[in-house]
Image (cartoon, rainbow, N blue to C red):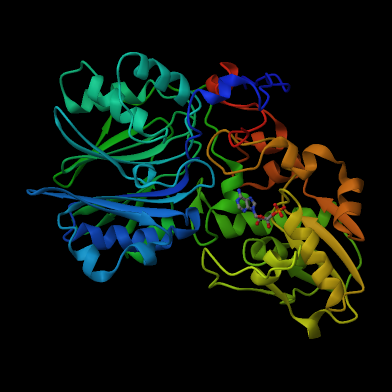
Length: 488
Ligand code: AMP
């Protein structure tokens, strides 16, 4: 594995190299492409509903028919941006959709995907999941050559590369443009009514192909196929580029092969939906095995196993099964919190967690509880939850984490905080336990996690190990801080 040195070049916040560009949005997102289905916008809308967990900041759909592209985008949840009547106005049998999860970068409409443009050969709409690691480098070169960018999104770079390609056919232009990209990309592009879909050579992010009648769907996760009652055909292979036109799927030339694939293990830990199949395995099943391993590695005597809902439910069930300690509903999660809510005026450290979670007192009163979470990032949520559980009567709180300590930032599209904000980057396990106020703390080991997954990898586990499988060109050239993409 071509690992980068563990000590990446450090660019400090006052280094003027960081001021060269806007800090573009991180693309931890969901994508969908629909081809050859009447009112494709409705199918895209439903698929995006199913992919909402992959992005809640903004949503957009672009469709194509003889009257050209039809575009609707906005900030917020899919259900806030689209209504039945507005979706129906997006006519055509081809659609591209995107849900965006982004905390960094501008929230203006130009940054909301699908990114659209018109070039010499047609109208383009592009939806991207992942993070390009040579985006600023490419962008600088394009700007130096006179390119004008509308957004700060890394995805817009690809549109310029397609438009500038000297190849004759559109297929060759798309293929050529993709070979310039480094890092993580699962991309769906429509050029008029032709859909192209591609995964980067390491296959960091998921992308699956489905079929419904004579039409086709490409989307981030299988849960989006389920809602459409579409049939799962296959995952796109790492480095594969496909074209869908007139009901025919063609696999174009593959991108240059990486030394080995590196699908993101964090998709299995936290990001993907448990009812999806990712990397050839059920996400729920993988998380249960993580929980079982965790119980074997970090047993403790207790009366109940509870989950931090909902992302840790599967791991907690696995822990309970392996340990023989009953799984209880010890906490409830609120599902209807909007993006904005009124904060009480007094400073209240636990307010955010209390809005989201509530303990079930009769389950916790007088009990020694094992709380299972899928991951620990900043540690702020867990700290509040531990206080909440003790207030509800828990006599002992043992925290178990269904993944190893997150110590390294993600440069491939998971929206992680910078190193200095990652609790495990700055403290060892006993210090973290003290900081969170738990009676004991145990993390699943990296080996235990890798051994637990169905095929044993190789996976990208950079957030746990610091081994970055794709070159971090923008970091090496000083465009992005080694502290993490959101450090500025
Ligand atoms: P904290 O340790 O307080 O930062 O929060 C950890 C919780 O956030 C875990 O329960 C995870 O379910 C969840 N989580 C993990 N990674 C992410 C992420 N990239 N974005 C949002 N939430 C996350």
